[in-house]
Length: 612
Image (cartoon, rainbow, N blue to C red; front, side, top):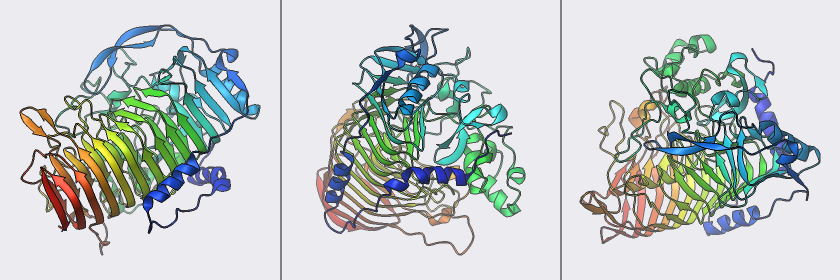
């Protein structure tokens, strides 16, 4: 089936070789001022990358601009618009872009220039070491919206599934469609735009057939529980296959993982046919320790690729461009070191359009970016199920950014099995300008559960302005049968300013054997404004929701591991405005030692040590 044999060992070996010369020490202890650690991370990452002073224009290698036409397409979960797309028969610049990058790399590096104009690319742009890909003002790359174009050029020939690339989908390793921009095991790379008129367009909502199906249709039935928006799945129709429908290509675990005992197999597959849905089948393969080379998706499957996917890269700069309409996550660096994303406008309002998702990364700076997303603006990840070989995400600074719509402004998880630590967020504006019809669901968000597990520790936030509050209506989560928490009573999905959800979508995971640990979180100087809507005036539904791990969810072997409460959380010098749920502005479960200092909620000051 494969013309190129690969394995998890191969993946690990390749990544290790890229970063060995740039081994990064763990940050010093945080017993002193933690913001000095943040300053040191920023200082380290502000050193400019250097490239040879030579330019390679894509025009020299055969690239040509194209004409566009307007087509009715999806601009978000719920809205259609007339959007520009290349005319039929437009010149494909894939080969020219590749040739320019390869020539630059062969010469020892330099800058590849994409001039002003509309460019059509029916395949991935693969970045190489010491290459700086730069878009001039007015350069607009339209990436083909046809999935088959991202199963043509990968390094791994998977037969009928196509030529695929090593990737991660929602934090599980797999062979899948290539991302639009991809790099594996590269060093000293840059992707930049001259300004925000330099556009990378994933055409996620652009139909790729006469039936109106598009990348976003593959989301299938929308699980998002949002009281205000995102009620539609773009381009879906009765009987359409998606990531949440049974896929007959997915063989039972008894065949692909014969080493499992019957009890192990039943635990992983759960009841019914949900195990055969693509979005469940991949994590099931991880739980079953199925080797990477057997986790083949691509053609015939419905796992959308991220837009910009960098794996095992060191010394990376992403700067100055505007990314729109991405099929899935907008930026997904995995196991990268020394990465800066600066002055990027990340704007995609479709399903799962997270703005920036660093995973298993060390030393990351997010600076002066603007996010307007159909999912989390920033979501820090660290592996899922058994795919934790890249370790924690750590030493990350987020500063001077603006967030608009999204599920969470600064989010950690939900895929965090490898752990998250030493994260610093400061001087941010969660503007929420679209509060009327597409509000920011929650501002500061942690997501994990008894499946995702992992740990979060040493998370610091300060100087956060939220002038238009967050969603003022609640969106509740569904608990498991037997839970001490009644289903649809806790607003973890939307409505709180600070949300720690350690029981995130528990009904979605059949294996629940890894209690998460959350501790040492410090939040200060958060100011939340009020808005008036639907006859209600408020800043949020509730100010703080902390739902710690729920021990009754555990379904593994006995004795059960310790299920620890959320510990050592400090919130100080904050004003949360006027929660709509004034009679219960704070919800706590399995929390130990929440310290409130000079915290104003509904005009009242709170100084307290709370446990529940």
